[in-house]
Amino acid sequence: MLLPPPRVREVGHRCSPTDEGRTPVATKTVTTYTCDKCGRENEEVRTYTVPVDGTSYAVDLCPKDAKPFVAAAAVAQEFGHRLSGNGSRFRTTVLDSDPRAVRAWAASHGIQVPARGRLAKSVVDQYRAARS
Ligand SMILES: [Zn+2]
Picture (cartoon, rainbow, N blue to C red):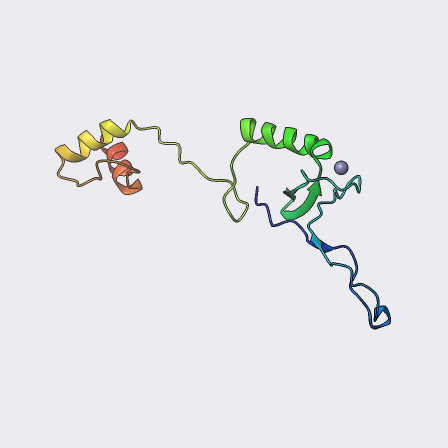
């Protein structure tokens, strides 16, 4: 999941002109992390990007409220299908011919094939045609 930087909010106060003559109060900038669900500030709040039906949502959650998301992500990683960047499933071509047999056949017929990787469909088709 992509984690954008936390939101930064300024707390404390700056001296206004009416404060003239008074001792200036130091201004300090504090980075706060607020859970979007329970609204509590927590140092351990993280931003989670959750894709829902093609739209991504970013939600800042404390560890307690993030539990269902972390659990769902674990299930997705273990049992789901990885998607490509545009959201479509990676397609795998089912090759019912043994690649080694296709390579051996191609070599014996003077057809050049790469030693590794995907075999050209045309080569596989020729192999199938020759075997049928
Ligand atoms: Zn929370």
